[in-house]
Amino acid sequence: MGSSFSVLNDTPAPIWAKVGVCEGAILGSVATVASVVAIGLCGFVACGVVIAGAGAFCKVVLVTSFVATGVAMDRMQAKRWSKIKSISAIMNMGCGSCEVFTKLAPDERERMIEFQQELKGRLAGYTRVIRGRSYTESGTLSLVKTATVIRDDGRMFKRHCWTAPTDGGVNVYEVSRYFE
Figure 1 (cartoon, rainbow, N blue to C red):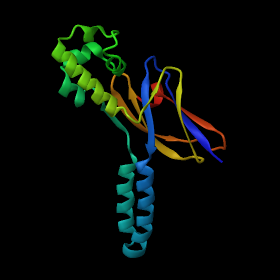
Figure 2 (cartoon, helix red, strand yellow):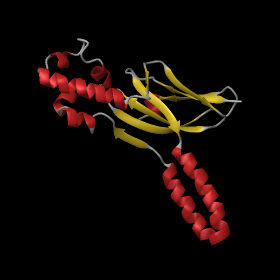
Figure 3 (cartoon, one colour):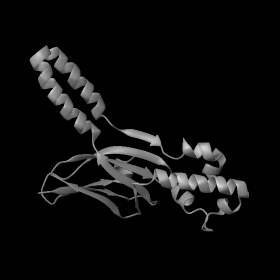
């Protein structure tokens, strides 16, 4: 028996997606075992502390800027990023389609190519999903996993996604609604 969930790209630009283990679920399981031990050894007060601590870990909702901070600002000026504005444009640099790239001085082009290579490395393990397509993950019934979506403008979102509760079922998570 199994089911799945899909991350549907209903946005006009491509996204990059990957799915991993839900750390919150693992920590919750560890907290449950620790709670049972705490009840036996220390009573109900210790149990409440352990459960409260696990609850904080279960709220994994991370919204950060993947490109516009960190590597991008280290490698190129904010002005350049404001002209390019997308991961797709950076990934396509050098093929003649990026007007900003062709206007750069040779040393700046070299830095941009280095940045492009670094970005490719950071996106390793992610799957590019074009508009109208889905990234699908299968598993057991009602399995929770952490889905990470990087939007073309560089924003990164991590959300918990569940496989469907029925055999062969699919839960669909739309990028425009769930990964904002």
